[in-house]
Length: 327
Ligand code: PBG
Ligand code: ZN
Image (cartoon, rainbow, N blue to C red; front, side, top):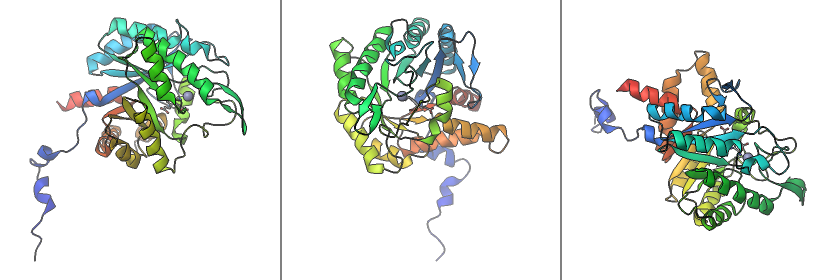
């Protein structure tokens, strides 16, 4: 018998658009931004064409422009003038992030300012917290680093951050941050935890952009092994149990399975299309090998299809422009 079921019936030209299961809206997007205390004008990042480090003095102007495009949320990274063992630049009152947050909240109060909470841009050794002697040699000291993260989180909240996003993959991080924020009167500030973060090769361009490469060792004793699906889910389940408000999977593009697993927990899920993903797409597009707009939109649709609510992407502003052009 000739097929009674024909999938192509619903793909007819004018019917197909009615049946879109997955869409990208501007409200799904979070734009990552780099602010560099030593910059006096935007500094290009060679491995991330089109992305720059801004001086903090430009923060208001940059976010005003993004808001006019339709961007509702930004994720901030800071490059301090000086680094030290204690990451003092990370929690200083007039630190690069603290200045930047204040400038943005003054210029565009409705912009949701999310701050990445980590020490690797601020430590002289480039690790994500306090280092010291551990069982197998010098490594990240978990509980001492938690105390540092508490101090940084409170300083971000005091500067006016709307959401705190810890990315250091320490154990007990969400519990520690929730109690520090609450004790200081910031019980309204949500925690967006980088909960399932893999030790990925795709962060290379970011480490150039943020100057956060490490001087010895690597991040494998804190970030999760790429091959371990159950372990990645457990990381997010733990953060959910500790009171995280939003979970995150990173890197996004190679983690459809993890995004789907984490979405089943029931909390909102953010995913991070990281610097290496951006660099790969951009390089191919610049060579004329791929169609940038189509590839980017497909990549974002596939993340939403896997279960992502929010997408952090360096393409955020371009996507807003493409959405405007369609209308
Ligand atoms: C800081 C941090 C990193 C990224 C986000 N926060 C780098 C790292 O873990 O080494 C990567 C983002 C990107 O590659 O775009 N811990
Ligand atoms: Zn870090």
